[in-house]
Image (cartoon, rainbow, N blue to C red):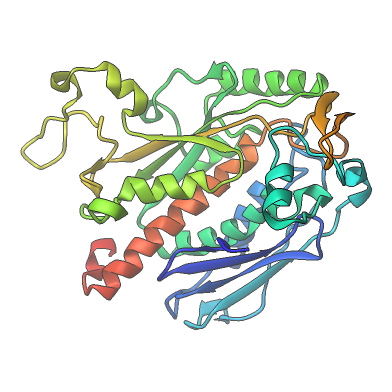
Length: 361
């Protein structure tokens, strides 16, 4: 199986299955002498871990990261950083009923047709548990890019959305983390949580949108043509489990405007009056805030009877069993931030290689 490596100069390789012994990875290309706050890395993992509230899966995992190499006295050595997170609470028996059956809209069917075999236990490699490795790597990248502020929050769940733009919300860590759904608008947050409880009670799932904002990114990040900043961000977001869409700046709503309405007029200092461009022009950051939205579908495994097929093409009925997220959004917030940090870290390493590292410092 290919496709287990993200990045080139700051490269992350991940391994492991949801119900295997452990998840882990290797980070290659990390600069030396970076002082790491290990507690902050664990904090990011705690934001992603299961069992943190009543609106996520009740699988109980400590998700404690153990670093195997590349760090001494909390400083990076410049050598590969190996890490591992052991799986503690996996109930394989919950998945025996789908051993020879394909869940609708899940990767069960495509994995087996491609490889001739699949790990049916919790989805194996296709499980969103793989994203725990991304959060470890992203947390390290975030500590290196300290001047760049990356903030994500849940802006909609199903039909319920915050009506405020990100500029009018309190995007402090305290405000976002105060809500179990990670929406910084209190009244909307409460509606979202109640709605998810209703959906869960019905045995169903629901999707939504996460908004991400990047502040303090210098002008000049991004390479024109095939390595545009927004293209790399889009690829990173679309690699996350359950993601169905990505838009930045004015996105699809921008198609409803005339050019005279959509153009971002300049002030004399190079800033712009509006920011329909989303902080990116020609694939290069322009110094304004970068903002984008990531759409997540409802989780495929539901606790309702569904008609499907088995490995022989026969129609059968299945019921979801086990512990699953009724909505992935609150746990996906740190994943979106991690993947954003990995994209920016790659650009930093490229700039350093090109002798223009000052753009991040």
